[in-house]
Every structure is written in C-alpha cells, then in structure tokens.
Length: 452
Image 1: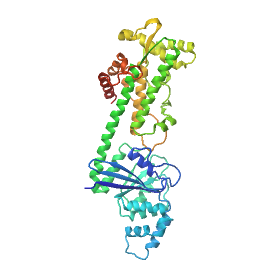
Image 2: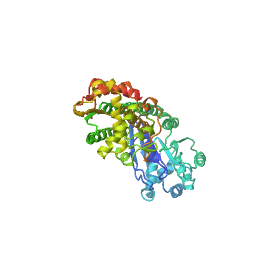
Image 3: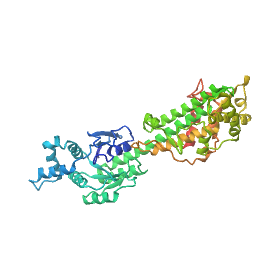
C-alpha cells in the first residue's frame, strides 16, 4: 500500500500553480504569488500528514517558459536513435549541459515530474492556444506519468475553455477538471482528489483518507468558530458600566471596549481559518453596501442588516440626541445607540429587577442593547461563513453575503444568551471576571450550539 503520494504541480508561468496550492493546503502564506513572470524559481514542497506515517507531498515547480526551444533541443539530442521512448529522451536532456544553463528552469520541472507519482497540469483558460502549449504538453507526456489537467480561472468571462479541452484531447490527456483557485466550487476539492484516485489506483486509499480528514477539520473549525462568536456575545451581553446619563467618557469607554472585543473576535476567526489578520485589517472588510468596520453603534447600519429595533431602543434615541448635544463629541448615531440602550433598560426594568434600576446619586447601570448584540452576532456569523468558503489564494478584500437568520434579525436575544445579563462576572470586559466559571462555559456552549 502506498505510504507517500508525490504530486508535481506544473504548467506555464503565471497560470496559478502557487494559488492552487494555497487553496488546497489552506495556507495563504505558501510560496509567492505575483503577476510577474517566473515568480516561482525553485521547487518548493508542502507535506500533508496523515495517520500511520502516511502523507501527500505537493511540489510547486517553476513555470515552463521556453517550451518551443526545449522541444526542438530534445528532438535534436535524440534524433540519432528512433527507438528511444519518452523517458529516455528526457533523461538524455537532463544529462546535457543545456539542462544546467539555458533550460535550467525547465530541467527542474522535468526532474520533479519524473520523481513524482503524477503531475497536476494547471491551465489559465484565459490564455489563447499557442504552439508553445502544444510543445509543453508533449514534453510532459514523455514522462509517462499520469497527468490531471486543472482548468483554472474558469469564473472569468473571457476564456478559451473549449479550445483547451480540444488541445488536451489531441495530446492524449483526457483527465481534466474545472477548478478556479480563486473561486473554487464547493465540491471542487473532492472532485479533484477523486480524479487523482482514478488516475493513480494505488493512491486511492490515501486520497480518501485525506478527504475524510478535510471533512473532520472543517467540522472542528466550524465548532471552534461558533465558540469564538458565542464567547464574544456572552462577554458583550454581560458587560455593564455604572455612569450618569451625560457621562461622555463612560459612554466612549463602553463603545470602545465593545469595538475592541469585536476586533478580537475577528482576529481570532481569521487566525482559525489561517488568513493573514494584518492583511485583512489593512484591506478592510466590506459589509454589504457599507463596510464591515461600519460602527456597531449606528442605527442605519442595524437597519441595513435588517435587525429590528425594540420600542425601548427607538424611544431611547431621543435621550441619545440630548446626550449628543450635551457632550459634543459623539456622533448622533453613537449617542442615539447609548440612548437606545438606556431606553431599553428603562422599558425592561420590571423584568430584570435591581440589575436594571437607576442607582444612587444619579448613576445607572448601562449595558449594550439586545439589537446591537444581535447585530454583532450577524456580522460575526457572516464573517465565519465567508472564511469557511473563501479560497486562500484570494487576495481581494473579504465581502460578506446576506444571511437569512430570522431569530437573530428580530433583535431579541435567545434565552441561552439572556442568562448572561444576570452575571456580570462572566464578561472579560468587567473587572473580576470568572472566565472559567462552569455555568459561563456551559452558556457559551449553548449559544455556540444555537449558532450551528
């Protein structure tokens, strides 16, 4: 039984070989991606490890840049003996002086293909069919290795997919798959490995095992992501501040702490799904028609997401306007939010007893409104879903799609999360946090299960 499967990823320069690998191994840091020709100059490998010392090794190879001249050179070298087969011709070429000089890059590719179990030939279907590609495929076919053609950039409008399929058939390569490295289909990875299993029968078991491991990792990441979101929601729900209604600094502190807590959740999700948090933060995260960084404390942003505002929140917005005029430093939307929180607290005081009543000397216990917490949950759920389906070769800013989640959109907290209102010690934003409290952990798990 095969213990190690070696796969050489080959193709012309700048067809997306490294991008394909980034997508398959879920690592946005592997190799270098650039529009410049010949970005990959050396063979780089990445190993996917399985149980019982089994593994799959991918080899990212340099681009084949001068296949026309190479094809002619190999024919000249071997024209004296008509009985030579393809591997003989490639071996003679690798032993020639030109393999170390003029065709150094191509020699690295050929050598790696001969030392691998199969080759994955990546095609940029936007490219027109040129003679160099025919010669390139003819050279690779001489290796006598199974070749799987991957049609890349299939999501683009202007492409030559039909012509490429005809060329592949003409040179005897009939195993092919559409797999856009930037926008891969949901079942694309599974179909790619299944295609390889048909080409390399001894590798079927190891490829099936890897597919099972991928499914397990996806499930584990999803559970971890739900726990990250759930703990964030518990932190924000249990958070409060004692302050007077016109205390500008207290209001600003509350807003900033909640913003920072959301940013921590974003960073944790990016890290979990192995995306570069620094890059994504610099690029910004677009949210529908606005920005992902659009302020949580903004009534228009809530309406845009379809989060319904409670009666207490809306009536409290009037108080928010007064705070805005008195302090002079807040945006109307921000002050309206805090006012909304106060209004909701006043409206629901009879339900929460002493926790919601105004305190001594004009101080009150302010907390974040239900609608804002629901808004926060939607933003994080959208981000999680996007990261789950996002290619690691995609360097464009993250865009989030609509989410149909009626329970959260009502602007009313589920029972499992409402419990956190009673326990201020559950929030890491408050002093004296009991982070590992058994009941807190149980509530986080309940919320995470509801997110599923």
